[in-house]
Length: 407
Image (tube, rainbow, N blue to C red; front, side, top):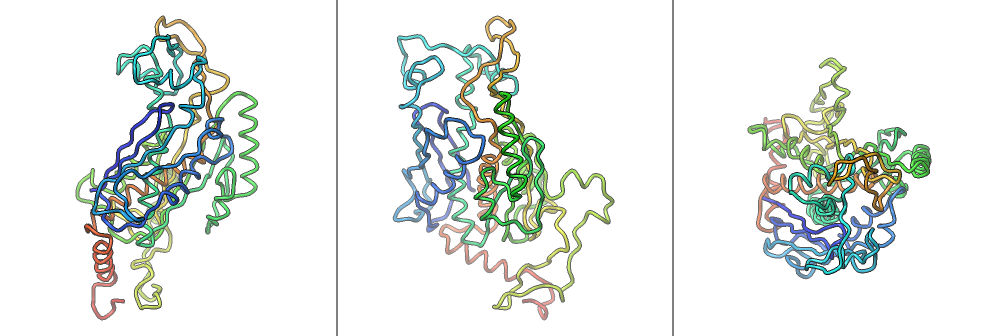
């Protein structure tokens, strides 16, 4: 079983990620992890925090000479530079505001609750009188650790030819065109991680307009995984379905309010004859140079988004997530004071205008962690070579069941 934990606060000394369960021999370096961390920090509409941080995950355990070692847990530490270089909203250094020892000088508590944030539910659940106790951990800064863990899972999945990408389909109501073939390299060059250049400029203008109005924007991201074999996940129990696990992992990303696969909610308006992905007959299957099938049981369409019955069906996995606007906005909403219940403006702390492009990168990480776990559940192995042997043996069984027509 693959599992991971994160720890750390937004303005504390640093963040921690712990990933356990990968086989030995997976190639990984800090430079590879840094690539995804840099992608997470980019994006038009990000706030001042990204000008301070240069996120770098230092591998503390579990990796030796560029490979995972003997299945050991992998621990990573990511420094929060703002902790030592910046000041909190009360003018005191973060080293004072977030000190883990008692301090003599009073720290101004946060009493003005933010609609849409974890503040109100958190302060009641955990019986605190300072919303900072909630917002520091509930902050999307925590997702840095997820992306670091996801980068390691990306390296694992690439050993099997699996690639995971994301792009932005909507920011603030500006809808991008959805091409049949996405140029992922061009998408990475877009300031909003959108494959449509015309929509990119319109999205940037929408972000500028929201900044001028002191507001924030949400949107929609799409995550695509290719190269997946048939049969990851299972239909036998509700909690073991890959669809269940993917909904949970993507839905756990900050501000995500909806998750769909393939054509998702649009399928509700169609008859079954227009929905289900017809399987191509054998004479239309393609073969690799070595005679193996390019993809066993290929489909004429992919409205299901690569999942049927809680299992992958060999088509690209397509997941979309709705991201709500950020709760911390420059022009605060009316709210109440935690201690008195009186009318107040909501608390404002340095924030982004939108982090929809970033949500795509975080969503990739969560999908890769979930898929890596599904691979290990299916193919196992204490060393990557063993996992590859199991994978290859399984792939050789796919195709028509009559032996005379197998690849």
